[in-house]
Image (cartoon, rainbow, N blue to C red; front, side):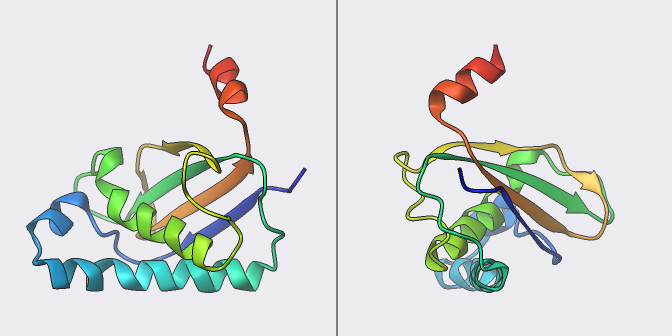
Length: 130
């Protein structure tokens, strides 16, 4: 069994609302730094590759203003997962390798995301949710 991996990037989260309202060229620029940051963090972790299905848990942090709804961090989370795939820690982010995504409610703290990856099958997730 592969041990869990936790990575954190501190920067303002790219919100779903901001991404939707941006021009397509700007959208790429908004998330490119998140993807690159998580790729570098994953490479630096020297973590073995996950080969079994995983659960990816995302904890967003916000320093100020009204806390956003949990799903508003999706552009940053997607870029983070893509960066982890780019680093080779995850083979792919398809359903064959990612059993589920869990986005926790944002908490107060320095802007950013913490992403935790741990082995879980769909069956295990279903049993845990009962």
